[in-house]
Image (cartoon, rainbow, N blue to C red; front, side, top):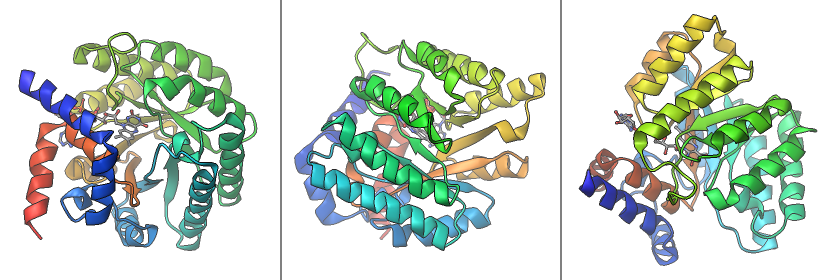
Length: 307
Ligand code: FAD
């Protein structure tokens, strides 16, 4: 337990290291990251998406990148998002898109991020592609939700994420109910203090179940973003007991994780969406996955030596 906590904190600390981030870009994903990252460019990810679709899995692609510091960089990210949407449509991929608001200028100004998001959402609406705003660390949660609400008034094709480790997550789900939200419900991946988030894993798990139940019973589309059998089984039982249609929810898992469970769920007739990240900025994402699960470290180290 203690070792697990040390390793988690260590990798979360590394995830914010800018020097290692720059080094990682130089070496590329071949050092194990390619097991969980779809490539450094969207073209590299296309064959993977086609294969996943062929296997009955739907996809949400995420162009990796966060903490953009200049307006020009945020506009470049926006343009890349627009091009990704066009490529999804052009290649007829069964894929949605996920993105982080810091990549579109959240830390610069609300006007900028709104303008960039409007562009992305207008393009996505042309092809009926849903865009989900990932949730970042707790300091960005409320600004993200404010932007989600403002955009959702105009754009039906928009989802976001609520993290059950936050004490306020129940309130957030309540506040969003008026917006007919498409919510991806997850436990949460960032290093948070006990002032804002549950420290005890059992409380995080119990709270995720409460959020899933609330959003589903209120009739809103729910994506259960978890690899945890306890969460998957809870959802299956809940929908069975309440006669909730398979059209009202889906399971989401990260690319490269629990592949067998993904295909079993597909065989059982559930919608399963794979979150497929790609891009040069894979370092922070990769480190957060290592922090989550010691087994992922062994998995990545094996990947380094298999070349
Ligand atoms: P955990 O609580 O990590 O593990 C519980 C149990 O599940 C483990 O004991 C094990 O039995 C099983 N398990 C877990 N992983 C594996 C595995 N790889 N292989 C085999 N068994 C496993 N977080 C955010 O903060 N913001 C986001 O926007 C966000 N988006 C996400 C999108 C998707 C599609 C997913 C799946 C996760 C996302 N996350 C996000 C991450 C999430 O918050 C968790 O950090 C992450 O999913 C780990 O929690 P878990 O519920 O999967 O399982």
